[in-house]
Length: 283
Image (cartoon, rainbow, N blue to C red; front, side):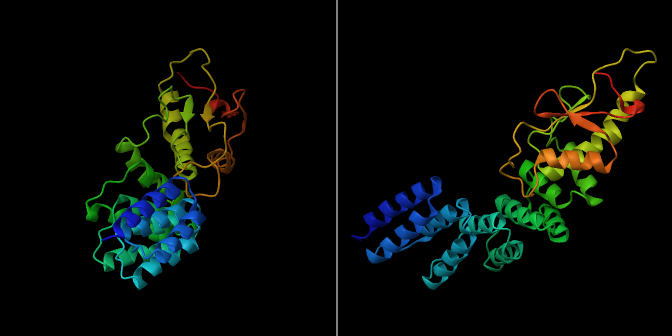
């Protein structure tokens, strides 16, 4: 019983390493625990694995999961989620899928975080089939996809027909409420992954703009030009599993569709230089 305070102290230190993304220090603390004969438990292992995940050290995370088996410490859902997320950040989707399968084999029910991380890992490798299968399996698990889920699965399905249906489902669920909240002339891609942004641009050009133009009274004064908000920074959102930025995804799909564009006067916007039928729209 004398070792219990040590375990508590070490667990608190490991949690601090997790929050501070100090994976190397977390690994040293685990070794110190062993030297002090403080017994490793699922809390200490999970905190160390999470520190490795945040430090993008997928191999260390896998190694710790294997050590748990040697120490007869059973991993829980949190442990698996952290390890799968580490594999996602390390671009190792086959390992992420195997870990996801191991959860079920070990009678652990994957939660939404498990699904999101595994779908994200598949999306990075453009492994569309497994990503879509996992997305379809959410309902059978009694789980409802959230914004992160839709963003990562649309990264996987950014250029396949099934992506359109998933994007429409997201719209129906109210996942992306701010797309045209400032008017149909302005598409806002904040909170979208690159794959979701691709489908948002297609939807905007295919459905929103033609509908607005169809309602435009004859002889109306020319309204503002079409613009897309892509954000000032090109770094990826936390949930983005794609290697590209939203800015680059928007430019790519505009180029694919033959829509001319220029950088807007506002740094975080792209302005369309469209043909006459797409020159302007009502506010």
